[in-house]
Length: 218
Image (cartoon, rainbow, N blue to C red; front, side):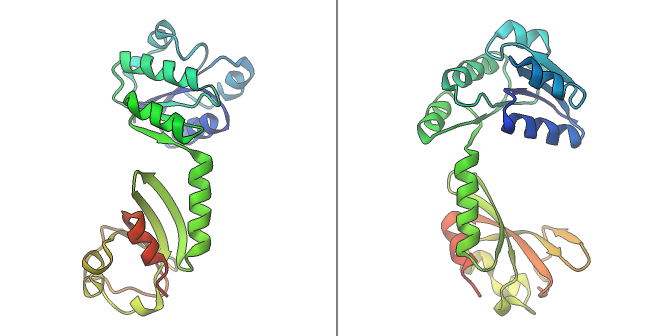
């Protein structure tokens, strides 16, 4: 179990808090809105009404012991910057920040966050990628130039092994897992000798250009 501190309870912050709690983690939330905090109080470890940019507030609630922090202060860029600086003062190693623009993301990266999350952009990229690739089922943008996507097995790959297809050499992708949709069985880091079936889906990782090319395969 890990401890997370979440600053800001907009839609994104609420969703992350609930998801982390459901996965068994210790979650502390901080927000100035008492109504939002009260609504979440029974669903997380500790929901606090307070200023997430205030060092003493975060120290008092034990935020300094967190393994990671998520900053989700909506359109208030100044608050996200101040909160991040306080989290750095607390020596929290991993800090993730929800951003509202590419300029916001650039500023946050300059002050040393682990990663930025731009939900609207990432959702748009995911949708556009799904629409443009007939084999693509799901898409997750992980960072600068790197993503993971789930795809059905192209017809020309059925009956062949991962090794036989030479996916790393010819397509510059890595198969992270194979999911048999009929049995529900998932094979993480599958054996290169695994023969692909029409009921399989593949979780593949690589740079976005390689994934885009792969998504076009019929």
